[in-house]
Image 1 (cartoon, helix red, strand yellow):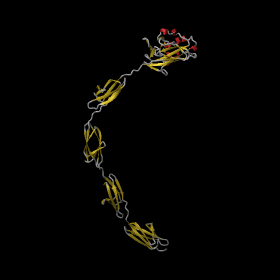
Image 2: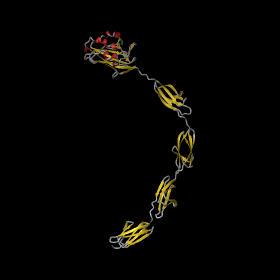
Image 3: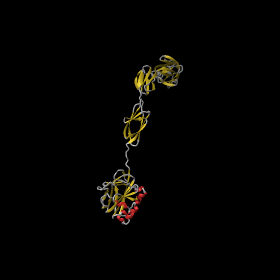
Image 4: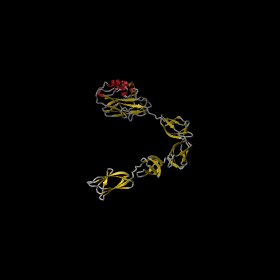
Length: 477
């Protein structure tokens, strides 16, 4: 601490106070403490709040002391180097050590002729106050106290308790008491005004400008003032690199300049087959047929399309100023399909009127509409129309229906039941007639049954497209 006299050139430098709990020599037991209960109270504080407050070099410290009864007050500074400085009494403070009940006195006071400034050495410090109802003779333990200024005691902090105990022991225990306060001091942090700027580049020898001043070629490390610095890196054939760098005091700021080469556009020429195909570059329609397209260096996609053809797709890598030719020959889309025609054995198959053979088979045909006819003796012709899709198989199942004729049964008994090949097909009407259509051509058997009449069974033949008549004259039983 620096105790600086305002009216005198003389001043003394003293270090701060050691923290009681961190130094065994300055524990509370190392200062004199009254073990007996007493109504006399003294409180000592500094002008910063909180436990163990921090003071920085150059700050001013004030001490306040309060007593609840009339008392003589003595104050000591136990420094970070364990020295003892007598603060009260001193030759610069006005008044006597006597303080009145409930009085609070600040040191230095408004009219005192000194200040207390924080200086080196720094560390933990302590203010120790001792209050007594009667004056104390400190000269018995600290002879220098009579020098009139701030007294730097020859006793060390670890030895303060014993000498003071000799002073207060003769007093009644209730006539004295003590208090202390801890605080810390530290050096002022001086902000640095310069830092270091390191500039690297992917191009060796590139010129470096800081705040538009050429400072060298990559890579360099230079001192720079703190704050915002504009950095520019230049090299032939490359675009300039520009960046604002923040330089901090005592730190190194690194700039990595990735210079991009200056490039020239190239071209892609597309030759198409068929000649009128549509051309796309990077999914943008360019036009039809032969095209020459300017492009930036790098990868580009080319697509060529035409009706009836498969799309042509490719990717080309165009260098700076390069000319690339793409020959796009499109492949025709497959137009054929397959007809799978399933027919009975021996059936004749016709497609669009032309015979394609007998029996089932697979036939490859162009996509489109087709008329199918299947012919087989004894069966009705099968006719249908199908649509064949490109690349697909169309199946035709020709289910031929046999050729048929009709049977007319005449009987003398109305309501007689008629069976053909064992299957009942109807009854004789009131007009004595039953007609049965769609009987397959060939031989059949008819049975006529009526209650009270003899059953009649008869063989008959059906010819395609003709009518066969049978007369059943049933006899009574």
